[in-house]
Length: 531
Ligand code: HEM
Image (cartoon, rainbow, N blue to C red; front, side, top):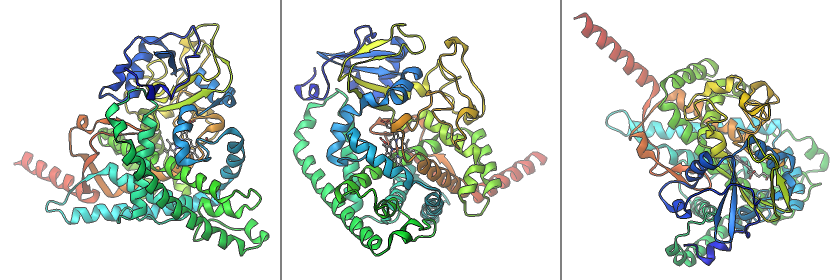
């Protein structure tokens, strides 16, 4: 059933001869179910390392933390992003995600220091201002309603919030998408949609009629890229002009927490030693715009979805938020105190990882380790072997988590080991997380990898989690959210991230009013009982 078109994406089957082959029809992948769910079923049947074959080609699916640790950390440089790099290169150029290793080394070294403490201080204040705008929008929607509540698609609201935040944080551009629409916003959403569409194309469930649509959509894509590039080029020019007026010493001693523009772009042009050309800077900015927008919006969307369905979690969260920030503006220090809020976000990232699959291709032949219970000889693979690391499977694995489908943020406060693996996997140990604020791959020995791990780990992990913590706390302290449709109706769709199939429709009421109403209701009930 595969077209020549689809076969072009994959390397010939050079995966190990001893890797179990999943029994199933590739056409199963073309159904309504998202790809990562089909891959889960085969993981349960075939184990932590298995292969899916189609014609002369194949890809290997990894769901074992020991093999994942090997791929992401121990032998990370033998792997590149393979098919994903090919797909994203026309959008992100030589940005960190698709870049060749030589470019990646130079740019990673330049970009990591841009996420410094003064930057985060300025960012937390900005997250707060943007979240306040979302609160105002919800207040206005409620005020305009006849019954004191508004039904809102919170997925769309979080996408707007995420876009405004990433624009300001990365290149100090005010998209203002919470309240307005503009040609640049339209172009960004167009490119994001295309990036998303292309990254689902690595999956061989091609839909032939789509090919017919390719020419017009490619034209629209080229026009969108042009709008964004012109906008970014203008911002780069401006940032360089400001920086060139200042001498080296002033630049070295800048306090980014007090600048009116503390963005990553500001820092990257101020660091003259690194001296990237404008095209490289644009690729870096575009990559961070795309990598940091939908991912963070998706975390907030699914976190809220989980919280509103778990009253005990919600009650503990609200108690923490009221005690830590109350009516104050939250700051960086407050994030440290919001430990349950942080665990809640981690737990929603466990259940809804963004992205649910990581992609790698072997640069030279290698032998994958046996993992927790695979072939003791390991799995020899050839150069060019395509691998999917299933973050979804790791995070939902019944071998690695107690009651994996339960939403229980408390799990990240507990030590969990599994003796069945004879010490091959260290389990989950909160203290082993190297003092990180959020549960991570080190604490879980690569069973929990929401931001990947090793050399190619996400550079924006703290940015994203601080953003999500501030936004969630600020929204929950002011509003009461309830699903406006049955949970099953929300649905899931695969893209670069997991989004809803039908939007996240929530009924929103002011929280004080909701508390007041509860009290009133209680009083009425007591009065009725007394009568
Ligand atoms: C890489 C997740 C937010 C920039 C990654 C990777 C993951 C990830 C899993 C590793 C991909 C791989 O190994 O193949 C997330 C999630 C986010 C988030 C879940 C939000 C909750 C951000 C933000 C930024 C960002 C806000 C930028 C400000 C990047 C970049 C890379 C990356 C540049 C590539 C790093 C490299 O290859 O050196 N992200 N990310 N991400 N992320 Fe994020």
